[in-house]
Length: 220
Ligand code: AP5
Image 1 (cartoon, helix red, strand yellow):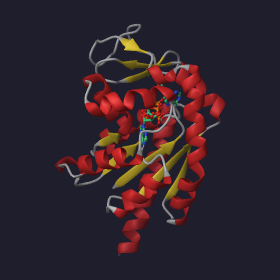
Image 2 (image 1 turned 90 degrees about the horizontal axis):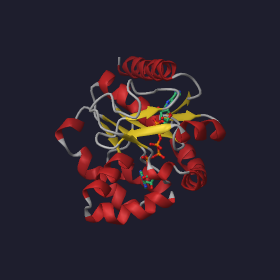
Image 3 (image 1 turned 60 degrees about the vertical axis):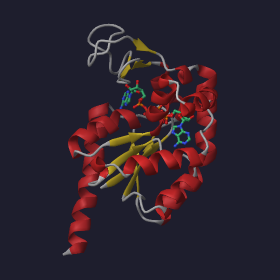
Image 4 (image 1 turned 90 degrees about the vertical axis):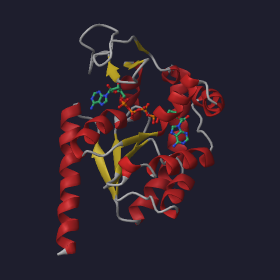
């Protein structure tokens, strides 16, 4: 199954992607993580992306589409994948379909912007492995230390208040045409993200199971 996790910055897409990837045994492709890795490595892509990301704007569509096409061609994507953070524009959504890598299902995570911002303010990210925590909702076992690899937890540079405002503005400008596009294709499903993490996961799995069941029934 090819799944798109869609929603505002900080709504919980990345958190759910980790769980779903384990549960469904398909990889997650998170464009933000790919770009942050490039920034860390100081590659040409990283140098170009850093300033854009720190301003809260979007990296150009052609760069993102190129990254995704290359990544989904890898062997581990042959049974499906989870896209986290892509598409961000209608052009990206259409490009996925044009290149034959469009999704079977789009899960749109929804929650009030003001509540999401509280999640972003408290988010802490491992500076080595990128694992994500929250100071209140999902604290690490040892303060400021990643449970997985023991490295220091930091606040993402684009989680600063001014950048967060711009990320929301950009998201809200692009959101409606993409939702309409996927609604018309009949693959859009809404997830209420304003629940504890496990409840959101349970709800997502319920939606995916029911899609699989109806697809199987249509086949028979
Ligand atoms: P990206 O990394 O994709 O950031 P984003 O979409 O803004 O999403 P986030 O990673 O901020 O949030 P999330 O929804 O994954 O939330 P999380 O699970 O961490 O993109 C960064 C930048 O890269 C963009 O601004 C852009 O510049 C560029 N970029 C990336 N993709 C691009 C593209 N396709 N095109 C162009 N440019 C692109 O959760 C947030 C916090 O809440 C965490 O602390 C978590 O622990 C907590 N939390 C999660 N779920 C719950 C819950 N249910 N209850 C309580 N707390 C929760």
